[in-house]
Amino acid sequence: MGAAGSKLEKALGDQFPEGERYFGLENFGNTCYCNSVLQALYFCVPFREQLLEYYSSNKNVADAEENLLTCLADLFTQISSQKKKTGVIAPKRFVQRLKKQNELFRSYMHQDAHEFLNFLLNELVDILEKEAQAAKNDAETSSPPEKTANGPKNPQANGVQKEPLVTWVHKNFQGILTNETRCLRCETVTARDETFFDLSLDIEQNSSITSCLKNFSSTETLNAEDKFFCDKCCSLQEAQKRMKIKKPPHILVIHLKRFKYIEQLGRYKKLSYRVVFPLELKLSNTVEDADSEYSLFAVVVHVGSGPNHGHYVSLVKSHNHWLFFDDENVEMIDESAVQTFFGSAQEYSSNTDHGYILFYESLGANNKS
Image (cartoon, rainbow, N blue to C red; front, side, top):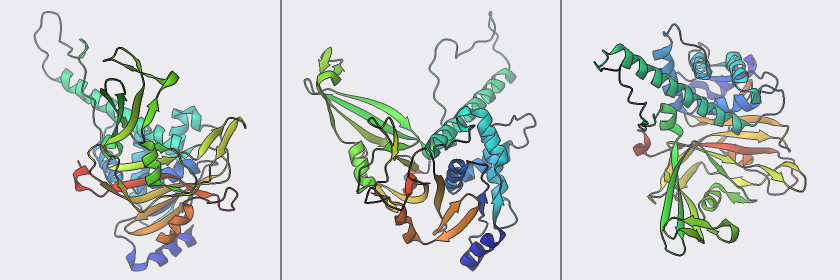
C-alpha cells in the first residue's frame, strides 16, 4: 500500500486536507461488507466527531468492558491519530468483537452490508442506552435515600412510561415516518409514527432516487381482504394508506433493494437496474412540505452479478474530493465517475458495480440539533 498511499498523497499534493487521514482497511477473508460501511461512517463527519468525543471522555473508565462501541471508537481514534496521512489499518479487534457478538457475521459466506449497518447502529444505541441507565442508577444510589417506611421508592416500578433516550446516534441518523390511513367511509385519518435509521426503497429499471421516494410515499388503497379496521366505524372499511416523512434525519441513509426474492426461482436475484442518485437531493415528500436539501457524501457499492457472492467497495466525498475505498486500497476518483455506479440500463451488462447504500447529509442548519 506504501506506493498507493504515496500516489494518493501525490495526487492531492498541497490540497491534502489538514488533519485528515485516508487509510485502507485490511480484509479478513470476507469482511469487505464491514470495511465499506466503516469507511462511509468514518467520513460521516458529525458521527465521527461525536464518537471520538465519546472515546476521549470514556477511555479512562478503568472497568469499561469491551463492546462494539468501544471497538469502533478505538478504531476511529486509531485512524484519526496516525502520524502518516495514508496507509492501511487492520480493524482486527472490531471484526473479532462483531463475530463474537453476532453469529450471523461469523461464517465466511458473503454478508450483506445493509444488514451489518443496521445491526451496528442498533447495537450502538443499545450500548449508549444501557450506559445512560447505569449512570442514572449510580446517581440515584449515591444520592441520600428518601426516608420512607418501606425502603427507597422506585419511580420505575409502578409502570411509569420512561422518556426514550435520544443518543448522538439518534441525533445523526434517526428520522420519523408517519403512516396515515384514511377511512373511505367516515374520512377519519389515523396516523401512526415510527422511527427509522434508514429508508429501504423498492427500485425500478431506469428510475431515480426521487421517483423511488415518490413510490415509497404513494397512496395505496386497502380493499377486499386488506380492509382496514376503522375505530370510528367499528368495522372493516376500505381505506387509503400512505407513508410520509414527518421528520427528515440529519444523515439520510437510503438502501436500494437490489436483492429480490424471485418466487419461480426459489432464490434471491440481484437487480442491476439503473437508478440515478443525485449529488444533491431535495426531499419533497415530507409532512411539512418544506423541501429538505441533502448532499451525497458516501456510497456503498455492491460489485458482482448475484446476491450470494461479490464484493463491496465505497465511494466517499471528503473536503470536496471523491475517494474510492476498496479494502486496503484508496485512490482519488473524479466526481463524474460517481455516475458509473448508477446501475445498468440493460439486463445483461459487464458493469456489475452498483450503488447499494447511499449516505446524504442535510444542508439545513435547523437539523444540527
